[in-house]
Image 1 (cartoon, rainbow, N blue to C red):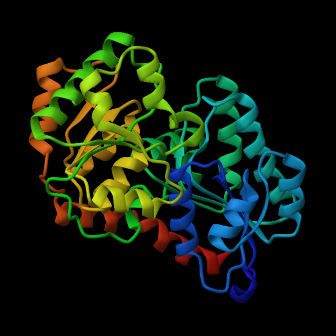
Image 2: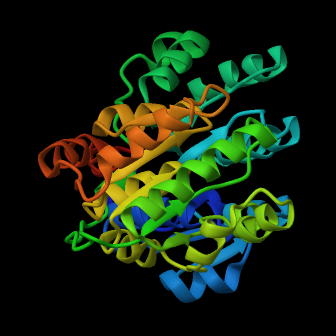
Image 3: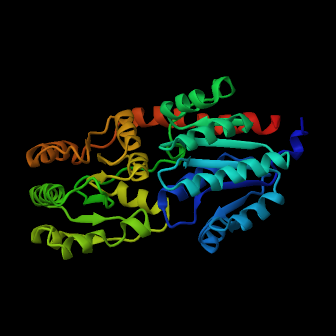
Length: 358
């Protein structure tokens, strides 16, 4: 066992950071807050300057494996932090990238920690085989949902049987006070292949009628620059946006999780497709309704008692309107949200417990 004073003083934190995605920046913020004060981490980042300026850390280029491996050589451990990194829905190549990091760290006799990870989807048999061989090499792991923990145990057996499970660590970010009664409708929406043109027309007509009925403006907040920015304009150009909704709508570009929480705290309703849009809005105490493109969104909504409709199986116009109207100016249950925060803090306790033992 390495002396505690020498353990992971300089960990390499690997994740989807610096991609102009507020959700992943929120995950990084939560992870940095869970590290001991003496830690001097290096962060894998796409936009290195953004991450350096925002968090005051050193970085390496996450899009170049050689750069990341060079950084790993100068670090004393590897932490795969938050999100679903070990999956093959992005690509088989993406999974090989993280496999290379784990194997290199172990060849260098450096510990590997999986922190607040979601596991899967693993659609290829070779992916499941690879993960089954990698997981026993990991010194410690925590999972963000029970499905991931169960899959880890299925693939790796007893080596992963005792791993803790906690809610998404973004739930641990500091809350702010909701002051949004009578405020705008805020959207954290994204494009999705699950939405047909007919689906979009139902969503947008319901939104237009909700805004008209309650006399609210509508703010479109892109959480991911590459995927969400310009959605309002694209829908308008495609002739899907009702004129009455267009006159009430505008897009606001944000940079930080705190900015999204500030907008949510002044909202009469947040309708979130994005998982971390939902979580950050709930941490701001805002009224929230969810639209789920992924089971993780539906699970978070159920945990928080937030009404949720599933893309691909949307209710009709009246059903959507009724669901959303029931939430307008009805803030989130603070006691329920605090219970989730306590569960999410398991990841922080896990990290504080295991770092001195590695």
